[in-house]
Length: 64
Image (cartoon, rainbow, N blue to C red; front, side):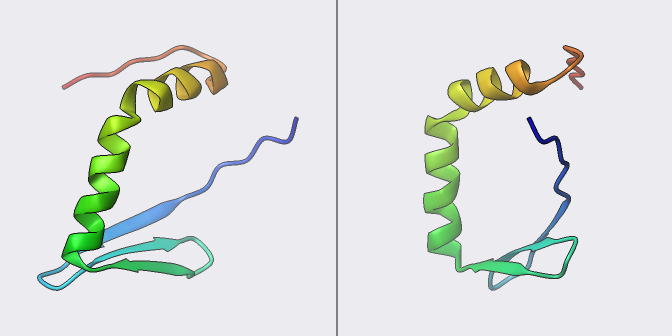
């Protein structure tokens, strides 16, 4: 199994949400598109948490 770590920067402006990876590739979302993505991620949150917990070598949870 290949292990890697992807780093992203997320910028929210008054016109769009821009996600940039460490190689400079970007995803641009208009406000309506960003809200649709947020809604999808909220619906999938429990499954995403389960997958992240399984992939984590050390189960660490930090809550603020």
